[in-house]
Image (cartoon, rainbow, N blue to C red):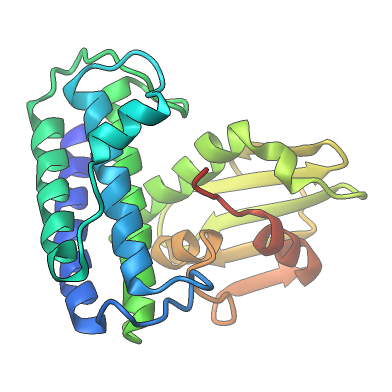
Length: 251
């Protein structure tokens, strides 16, 4: 996907996020984020948007210090102002991404073609996944376009777990194949005692294959939906290992 497509997806997801937050109410529980309320989720994503904006706006070459991060985000508003606060931060992020030069140089934390492509892609998927959390809070199903689903799977597997593969350790080697049913894309997750090696393409053999539409696979691999209606062939314990250990936390 192109940078502009990611920014457009981020913009749409933020608008949907606001609608779902207002519909749910700040005290509603978020089933896909245990122990969180909608309030926690709005605070989190609003915080992340302002944090990301600081790197883009200032072409920041290094990680913000704690004090700098606190200054970039500002004080957390009271409940009546929380959703408008989120909206303001979301608009500022979209505007900064659209105004940034293509040769922007700044800190980023995953492999990417450029810092700008990283931030546009990461903030799009950050917001989309948390939009799915809000939809879960109101009992509303979530989905994404096929190409966005493929892109999100690829970011998760080839970017996040390219650097976090050690989380996927298991005593005996196991191979999980991920196959998009509606697009010519597949991935192979080889897990073992030292972690995971992930590649694009279909393995010769797999202990478990997870197959379905790209949108559903995307949300399932982020543990935002069940896999009961997807095609799971082989040892379900291999998929269970992924679902237990493939977690991304804000630290």
